[in-house]
Image (cartoon, rainbow, N blue to C red; front, side, top):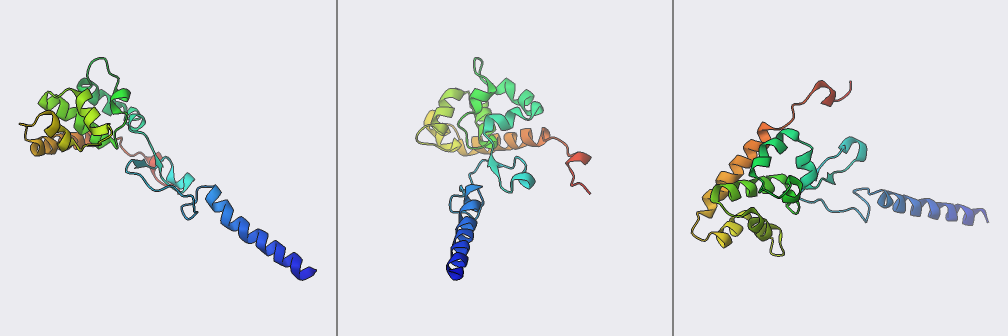
Length: 164
């Protein structure tokens, strides 16, 4: 009887070790979610893994970036609504710049990029303005987006450093 009791306890412990990590989202568990392109750590030290932050929330969390982008957003559209559906903030900001630079209606550009076809920025430009130099327009817009993000990146403070 003692052997079967130990065997049962061992089986319960072994199955618990297999089930519990996957229930808590362990990256090694069977049910771990694959990483996405829009990952931003909420608090990686606290959670142990990255969580996706939607582009509208990521943009809204940076007031300086909001101020910089607001003039590029079409009237009648909020910045949050404009950002919905984009894969990452760089893609969204570059699309805003292309719309502004080439006078392409942002709603049409967004539809091409976030719709069922998920066109790249270059493909969307080519669809909407076939005579435009899409490659050059993308390069310019990506540089502008990078500059926007870099210029508005919050400075690290002493409280951001690891506690010693």
